[in-house]
Length: 489
Image 1: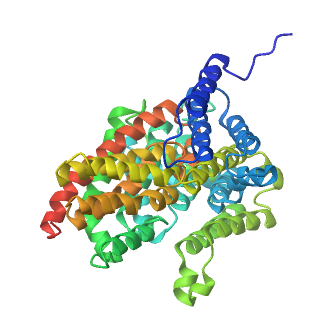
Image 2: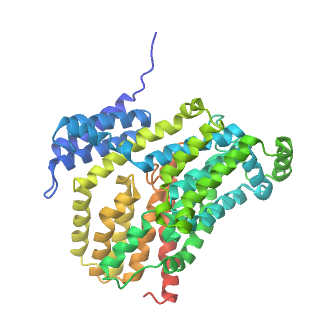
Image 3: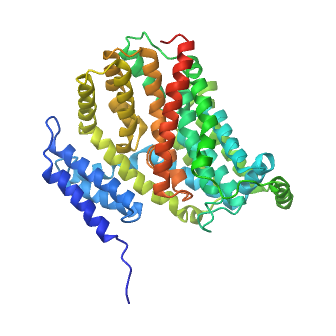
């Protein structure tokens, strides 16, 4: 009996060749250690294999972990190298992602997800575009008080989006995701980077950016919550208004008009009847999670009562298990959660050690010195800096790691070239969120939305690149004019 191989042999051999060329043929650049260069070869190979769909992403992640361990690129001893290779599984963000997916299963099991979907349809169901704007508006309202963009986009908004798509019968399992689900998934995701750029409290790395800007300018620029929000208001709103329209044009849903959706939704709500006990428990757990993710206990009782976002998600899952809303078998059967934990842990681990081994710092310095020697005016040089800063995120699986490695160096280079301090700071700050659009591993929200399988890998990357350019253009033009009005340059 013949068995189909799980490996696309031709693509695999080409990628092995690419890794060997980087590892053995291309000389290690001055200022870079051999382990850092070899890890880069493995990272490039892993990303290329994912893009080429050589094997399932989880399988590729296991191979990457094994290669990092046996090659010892991160450490001198075998046992330490193995610990390094597995270190991604100790990242709380990765477990927040997995736990969020597990929690979303309860929405389907209890029927609460369908109920939420029908409520949204009743309110905004006349047009698919209207549903897209409803998702974007919800994301925007939650952003100022939800410091974790992963909890917001993946834990709160994504289950609602899935419920709406499923309610219309648009699912990957049925091969009907093109009808509506693909478009809504893209809107769900691309609202997340825009809202993250608009408030200091909308994503975890933003306070780090505030600190970098303050240090670089000798505290002459200290972005308060209000200053950040006011500065990002107009470009952020413009980007949020454009995004559903751009995606509607580039990735149009097959179902555009749903004139009977509101009446249909009401009829299904009538069939569901009043809230069941399990739904009430789930609502209470989600309310508790939202309060913890927003940080209400810390606001009211002091920082001693602050609860980590991942710990809060774990508490929510534990409560659902204790109350019987979910069974342990439900958790085990959530394959996408476990698959995401494995492949995202591998990518985060490799990106983290590229930073630790100094490759990212070397790259930042190289770019900075190169631009300084081009002799460009501050406008051209700043544009090049921002472009390189943003699109180098293809090599990162964490916005925090990227910002930590590169923001300060790129901002200092722009200041040295004579760029106005405040507009450059705001553009780089916006780029630090816009970069999330690019890949399916760009930030914590990415694997949650991508893992629902509404959007193929190639389509995800194409839409991500287009939206990055649209958002960057909006922030440059609308933001530049707005900041001129505010007197920043």
